[in-house]
Length: 498
Image 1 (cartoon, rainbow, N blue to C red):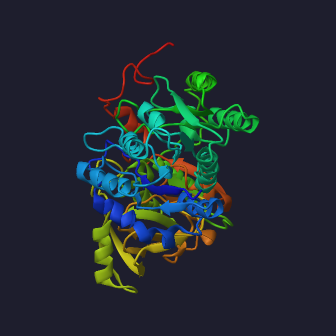
Image 2: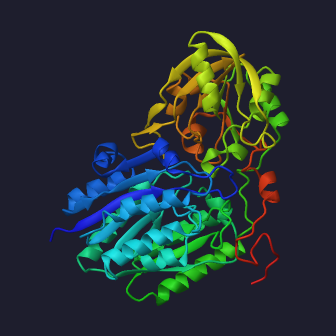
Image 3: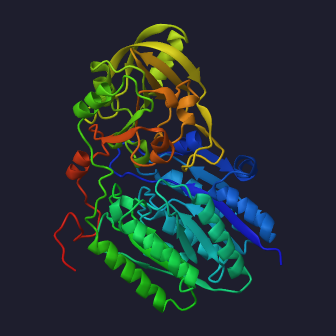
């Protein structure tokens, strides 16, 4: 039988504390592909949609692919933007027998705390109660009961940095094929606990997340569960359902599945305070002194990660204090990626490649968080359209083209500074090399990212140091964040004993 399957993706991780709402223009500037625009952009790539196209060929499916939409983490999605994305996507569901789709799981829209639950409920209503709906998710999804009730299977990525979207989509495709042929009847249950975060924020190198993923894979291999997914949640979303979850997909009867989900979440609760120390940050002053002391004769770069101004967590990406400090100690043979500042790029264009001029840089969104505008004497080295093809291992890779908006590289004293017109964290070496920065021969590389940078940059680094540069996603900012919509009581805001 030739089955018609709807595929596609809608991805956004919403930081509800950001004062910049996410609009349709943010999706257009990142990824917004409709219908026939999708196959040439995703076929043959190691992405979730790339896997869907390959699976369709293997299993003989006819694909409906109405929408691929993704925007960098940012503020709450505008109501009209979410409604338009839903309309585009659900219009492709007519006549479909099942679904294999990619969602993030931590979107928040105006007036809707659970957009993914709404999408899946709409899809379920169109496809019917028995149609298999298989969904891949980010590990940092805030999974809800509504999502679990309307999806046949929820399959979260199992690596952080996320490098297995392709593999998880293939896992979903094989499960979908079995369900379509009537071999299995997948049903999914969920367990949560009163915790905003835990599982070491999802780090999979060691610790409780690693242990639970290993147990998940053993259960799947033994046939005791079809899928076990562990999500760490995204605590910068001030919503009722924030926090870690475990979903278990079973064949028909979900009694044992619920027991497994509850046992896993009990362990997540018991280990909620575990921290591997990978986000233990030192001050800007300390980090630049260490960079200065090791810049001479360094064979590999020292990587400084400003985890507080990470656009991948919804921060603004234009904090300047770390760059200011690097300039103050006169670091040489250094690189900085990147300052989000479209206006500064336009000034650089006016100055022209090969020329030198004054530029007011960054610090425009929240100067009290990570530093205000920095005036520099800059030599303009390169200007590009910002289109970059990334082949690295992390989620921006797989051979996919990305646009970071009109971009430039300028040399400020001994520092090559990248300035971009669309905010994005640094995760791929091509983000540097496309502008003329050679990461292999820098003494110091400063970047804005929380953890995803490690997949590409840790292998080339002599050491990695994380720094809290004062941005809105830093630990100091989190300690002051005022939550008003999370369920209460909840750890760590409340002292709870279960």
